[in-house]
Image (cartoon, helix red, strand yellow):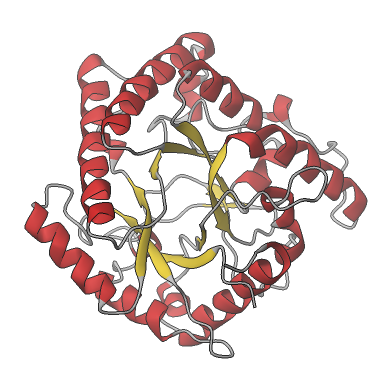
Length: 341
């Protein structure tokens, strides 16, 4: 059996879309238990990717607190991978003060990442960012706002480089300057730093095909029918050819072709359960468009891949079968597009 890429679960779905205006946050320790307890034919998750978000994790934690975090995760026989920087108190295209806050959050996240690397519990991973701005606000001045985002991302990249970290911009349709595959490429190219890249999520990036929030950039024709698998395949090839060279981090996910939001989270590509009958993706097959190059050769670019299931109801997330189904899907992806070391 292949043992790479390592299989990770995400912790931020216990927070994103939760809260007073939705369902209660799922405690961090509970998510670690669900992850560690999942098992399919003797295979378990190898690690977790962390959202550095209250109430799970305090971005102001001391180095001693980071060590305690590492010990806690290691106690479940899990590694730590990619980190989500809590940049939303700022904005990459906001005022000078907002952009300063944005970069400072990246600095604090990179510090945590480096300490975790030095402790030996984080062998791979990036720090995830977004523009922390809406497509509506970005559309007021696309060229000017893209320049501002790129400037902020450059400053953040320079900070990250001091810690030996790379940043990955999340391909999600709810972020201004990142809401389509073309705007995402324009933003990344404008940053002009070696340690910037793209975070591909099979659910979020799927909506790029349909032009949500940027109709002029849709890839599939306006009269596309879901039964046309050939057209869908060609669309995925077009999308991944453009963004794969930039991709530093990869999320396995399912999508039913719709958008969804809960709590304070804007509508974005709906994360479906791994075995949702309404899912439009052939997950093990379609992951290959990201994990293999255009000639079909493995890129081996990602030492780990992660499942992202944001905004699932708590009844779903607290059901152990959910995590076994996810793990089974992740194993299928690795068996088709992984390798052994």
